[in-house]
Length: 424
Ligand SMILES: Cc1ncc(COP(=O)(O)O)c(C=O)c1O
Image 1 (cartoon, protein in one colour):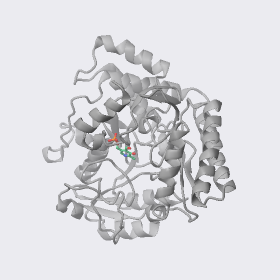
Image 2 (cartoon, rainbow, N blue to C red):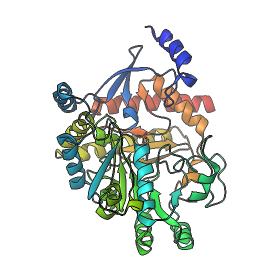
Image 3 (cartoon, rainbow, N blue to C red):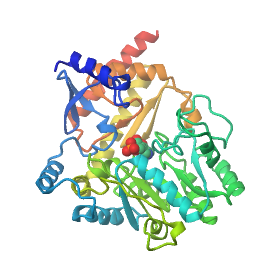
Image 4 (cartoon, protein in one colour):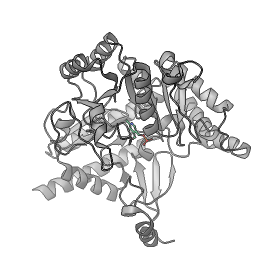
């Protein structure tokens, strides 16, 4: 089918002509290492990485071989299988908070069950999250994730149609990196709070020194489970995730993306006494958290995850990703400065982007000061020059080469010059 026919067909059978993720005109055909190709054959350096899972590169030979080894023996059983058990073991060995693991298929599910586990454990209802923090698509998670007009803290603003109004009463919203605010809210609501969920690195915003440590201390003081959403950061910032990287251990965490090696797998992991709520025999009937999923822990995704983790355990893997990311961040910053464009390159080396503002960025409201129109134009200019990325993220891969870095720097230089020309 020609590309134009594919676009027409997509328009006919998909709302908005898309799966909901990327613009309809992006139709991707294949990926290898740090590159992808679209249906017209155009090649891109890929910083989208499938929205993050393809950290070691597309179609990595070790992952492909592992999956091919499993495929003739069946793709899913519903019951326990050796690869899933081995992956759970690998997670407990890698991730500081992980004493036990429950598999699901997406980060959305992992986050909704982590919040439910905190409620079951605490026998209380309210969850505190941070404005701008993203925890998937559940009714509870879709509160003040991207409000256009932020309201008064701690009242949440739903991000989507179709969410029952009553859910707003179950969530409290605080500002990321504002320890005074969150401490005040926790003290005030401690008797209703089931848990606190946070992205330890919120979208592009690193935690300020002491923020995660303070959050850990105040939640511990009141016996309130602290959940790190490590769907993005797990196995990316370090082999033990953001909790290893920032040196703060939560009670529970959620994992997704990298841990499934590009297949549908995510996990809730954490303290055994909280995870016990998933075990009917370990807790009283009314404390049991009922959780099943058709494809949970299937052997194909599990073996893909295991093969990915083996690659990441090789000496120098993280040093390499961080070196690539540091080079890219410094280059982008320099190019935009030279072009006289107001911009801040923020994030950590494995995951960063530029926000077009000269303001300091420490929380969600600061990020609203960024010029979105310029960002969209810059991304468009880059796509024309063979750079694929999401709306607001560069995901760096272990597979990115010096040639990828060189191509990217060339594209940034040209795109920045174009941007400057069109704004003057
Ligand atoms: C921090 C975070 N949590 C949860 C999710 C949801 O994961 P999924 O898309 O697998 O449902 C994402 C997805 O990007 C994420 O970035």
